[in-house]
Length: 466
Image (cartoon, rainbow, N blue to C red; front, side, top):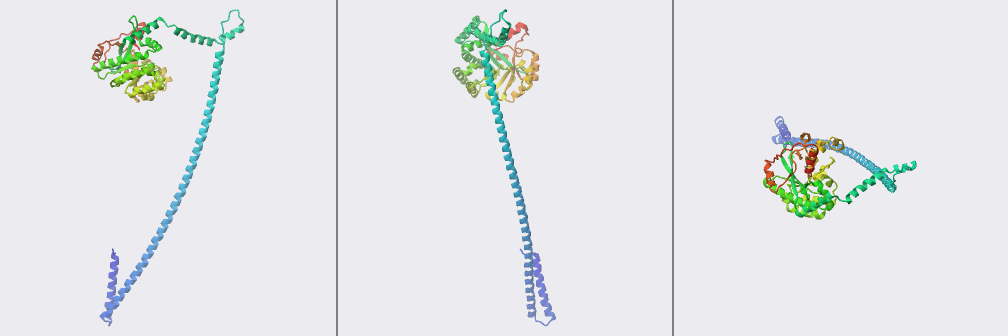
């Protein structure tokens, strides 16, 4: 687009050349045509002069711009070179740091391996020395009693091995006791066989209540057998004999069948009813017995959310490959687990939750024992919250006085079980409906239990705790 200054210069050149021709025509004797030729020549000269001066001016401007551009390119090249030098320096430092770190790691690993090898040698030496001491102790003869008239030099021989004599006598006593079963063991074994043959056991129910509302939330099924005289035998009396005779699996089969029957009857009136059913470690570890139990539980899989299988804490601590596989098979079918008989507070909530454990029963005396604070990794007051983060509910069992309830509430315990709320009660053939009728809106109202002390309390505890 033509600039205004260019137009203005062209007009000025036309005016100058026209004025020059007019002046020559008026002041001189030139003709009009001659004056016009002079004016045109002047105009041509002005045009050529303007074109040459403009070209020279543009050339000087372009030269300056080229010089500026060259200087900028030089500055950019200098900055790029400086950046390259810095980058090379950083790379060299990084490589040297990595090599130094690698050397330190290698040296640390070598030193750690050396220490581990030294520890292994020390352990082997310790094991060898312990084995040597055991061989020496085993080879020592048992010293006979020294008569009164023996010389005094023999008394040292007698005094050197009192521990060996005590250990030997203690080791022989259980063998002698187990080699000759008592009459009571025979009666218990007879009662167990009669219960298995007749498929008859007595089921007792003990509620698990919420704290502090004391509303019934769960039931625990407790099994009792009757001896030949008709007296009730608690589980602590007949389970050892059943384990020795290899009959625990058949008892657990009967127990599971009865628990499923009781649970179905309870859910007719109270659909949210849940039941704890105890399972022995021998049943979990016997493939043949467990296969029968698994088939029965598979057939009643609809009750899996309400039937809680309960194991001892020691059983889950000593799980083998077979027991772990069986436990995983139950968890895959939707069954939840509970552990009881907890003797210490050294528990692993994450591991238990991964195995399917959703309830942990701890004695109230264990939770309130001040000595546990120094021996456990966590304070008893924090156990309930810790288990809750992994989806495990803590149930305080064996609660027998109100003071324990107050202390447990300070620990955040939300469920309780014990004689303070209700003792295990027998389930009559028509008792399932009566039990749920008494549970109004999930609240159980146990009969008042008189406070007993001394031998009466001991007798009540022996008859009610499984």
